Image (cartoon, rainbow, N blue to C red; front, top):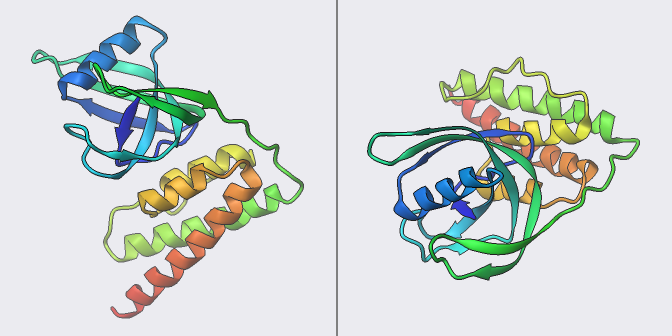
Length: 200
């Protein structure tokens, strides 16, 4: 398990710089196996040194690129595969480990496609406002995947949301619920950004 201050979503890529000895060992172990490990959000504490408080819903990640640097650090690109729920944390020896269950997905309902369109429109508004304010953001011309389930995760990764809001999205059991939560969070963010932009 790799606790981070970032939420990883299924279908989304995440670059990692691995420098701590325990996570170097985790990387080596994963590369010797199927290349998979769990990513969970740290609620409190630091990524370095342990002693953190971790949330129990995360994502199974698969290493898709790996480069070992001369000093033993690793540069990885991982891809989120599917959601997992931590049943029980095991001792952090030699690195964080847990017993996990794969979490099922509720199939998308008849309103998911329309909700996907709402989320795409709000996301574009939020990203355009971020750019207007001179803040880093993805291009406001983004087009989400036609599949509502994939689009929800894609939007969550691109949206200017904090990690706890991202976690709230991840914890939903299906695309419909995920898109509704995203639409609400993005509408709030658009309102805040628009007000800031109006101040000049």
